[in-house]
Length: 153
Image (cartoon, rainbow, N blue to C red):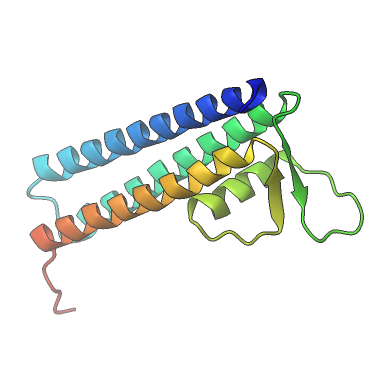
């Protein structure tokens, strides 16, 4: 790996660490809130948990998108391009968010493609998103085991 590749790799690893820390803090905070409020009704308890976790994921996705955009401003770090488009279509700021969303969730449509060293960031984002989404699912499952009471409604 050469200069710019090392910079992109190091920055990518830093972004992953920050995303994991954001998720840890969000998960810990949501758990503390719901544990302290043992009298909280089922509906608000689960809505708080789900919307809180969704918000954490969205913050993480935005952070990856911002990091990707910043990296593409570095000469030689790579760029994004639309696959299968005959004419050159520019990439807008919202496209970084779109690619981050489909990468984080491992959906990966393949219509917007990174090339160059920045591809490393997107590979790590996919792995990180998969781990953090399953972490959220596990936390939700544990909360449901502890507090879910079937409704007669």
